[in-house]
View 1 (tube, rainbow over the protein chains, first blue to last red):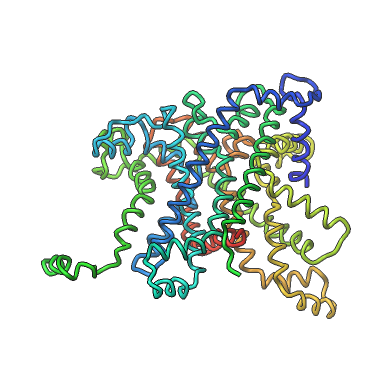
View 2 (tube, rainbow over the protein chains, first blue to last red):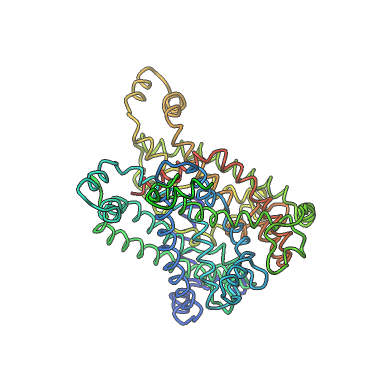
Length: 273
Length: 292
């Protein structure tokens, strides 16, 4: 209770207070913190970056996961090696992952630039570029979540009775038609779960940004949680009131987005009865 | 060799000696493990080799000196011990407390149960960021007024807030509700106490649920970063991810050193993961299936 319910109420109260290191007491200031958010250009940018990142990360992870799970859902030689390679990404922490990818995508010495050179593409600035940094962060997190998506989709694929796909094949459906009309609908509960779960995590992106760009260059990777962290703990001012308001705003976004996803999902998802 | 080439051309082309899916899976696997491989390779190169462009894919000789240098710069052994202590204690306390609370929610009728359960479910939905600041203030207060070991700048502060998670309680409750209540009632009629019933009847049936909870709690704890970053800034109390991030901050361009540190951070969790891969995979699959 102490670390569950109390903090939720407490931060709600704080979001209506002026609360930072410079205020000896914490007067209630009504909606001032929330109003300040409306006029804070960085909050607007942070929302935009969070949305763009989520729009890259969620479909990206799901497509990679679905493709690999379908490819791995068969009994062929070395299949456990392939699967283990995908699963291994689950064990790595966001910090380890980010550190490797900063090196892979290093503007001057990174091996990704070398591969690009090989196919005739000039050296890219990647994390030093305001237009590319967020994409690189999306790539590293998609890699990091591949194992998770593969596990979820593989478990769902293995729950599909072979009789169904075989029946479709006997009825003359091609492989692609079988996949689209039989497999994909039967995977839709797993897809809905992944959409919801990955979105919640995407909206809370922090570790990779902290380690690789610190929100830069020029705030181009400042996402909501990173800005919240900066306000509360990143500087010397400890803007707890303002940061609490941002946290509650994030909470509101998560609730609304999740509710909408379930609403839309209910219509699209096929549950086997 | 010639025979197989002949077999590949002409009519027999459709029947490859191996599944065509290998042609998809081999490149995919190479992409997936490339970051791991490159991490390892860089960690045994000299700084000059690492900064060579075009990159040297196979170093001429193994240069292991990065490892002792990394250990000199940051106490990775200490980080490892801290991570292990935090993870193991967190797992044990979650197993015990979530079992007790989950069992109470599943089987007992007590006043306020509905309200308590609703409150707990609320905390399940609230993202960590909302509770972060009050958690910081509470932890600071506890450390000053109650017990230094759970205050800021001590690994205790990384355990206490997650000693029993709402997720764990909910997960165990859902599991207990799938068990038939008759055995427990029979044991109660025979005079067994409630704890005896839990210990002798229920727990032996709970292996899969407990191992799932243990695996998920362990990974969460081991890879946690945001809270340790805020709660701890004293080197000897840092966990591996925090220690690695600090190390990166201090040596941001010494790639061979950084990768050696990263390898040392990764190897223990990889060993645990491969040894218990079945449990981890089943646990993650279970969260997915329960969510659908």
